[in-house]
Image (cartoon, rainbow, N blue to C red; front, side, top):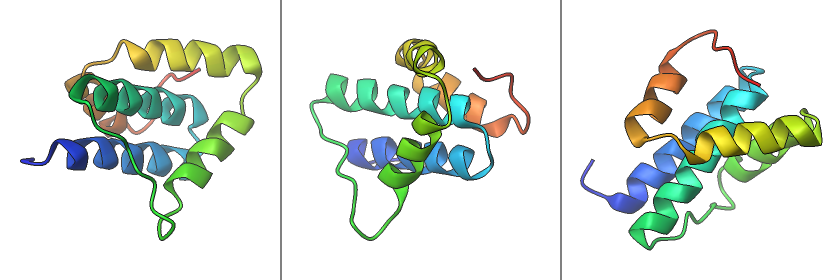
Length: 96
């Protein structure tokens, strides 16, 4: 993908998909990876009012205990883009 911002937003979309698929741990991990990526690239992941990405990621966080959110966030912060994409490709992941 040629757009740095597009990569970050695509990861948010994948995180939202994981939330819808009832994999909140994976959703939080991918969202954390997206935030780290955006920060490293000097961009901001702007959540559009037209898409439910933020709401779905927030729902995923709410579905987990505070400890599980912290663990999933820490794991996600260490993921490379490739690892985040691989995580989204695995239908039934062992998420937090």
